[in-house]
Image (cartoon, rainbow, N blue to C red; front, side):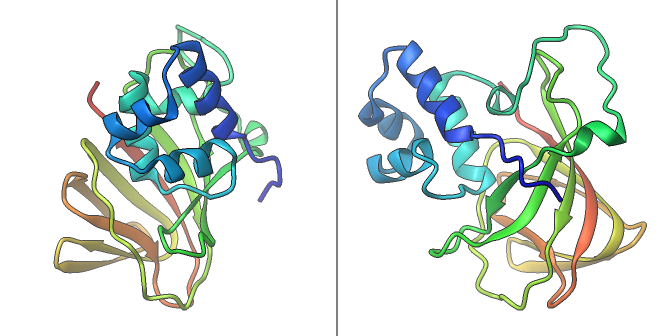
Length: 192
């Protein structure tokens, strides 16, 4: 895993300022608090995917805009050697501990509606995950290890070779089985 962490907060702040929007306006549009927005913009907290999607919608941009490196309109090839950079999201708990490393597989593709990720899930004994919901759909394929997905009131256990496709509007959380790490291929679709 890499230590080269894209600075999402500064990108969010730059987009917000370029649109002449205040933190208060983004908070109102997103349903998040001013404190949450400032914490994300200043890279003090590792946001979960749900709040990032809400911020993207409030700014009128795709989620991928926070990860984009360039604006390639044609096909984009992502070589294994180019996947070194990653972004981490928290599991939504108060201490914002990292539990996943997201490797974007299409950050150079402009105008995309899907976000493909290779995700490395760190082993954890935690069981206090905060479920989140957002518009869209997600597809997950387990490449290695064992994954648990809390979806509504049900927990799904997936093993190597298993997959799941679900509506993201239902509260959910993806994590490794207790004490186990995993590697998954995930596709997140967020309607514009």
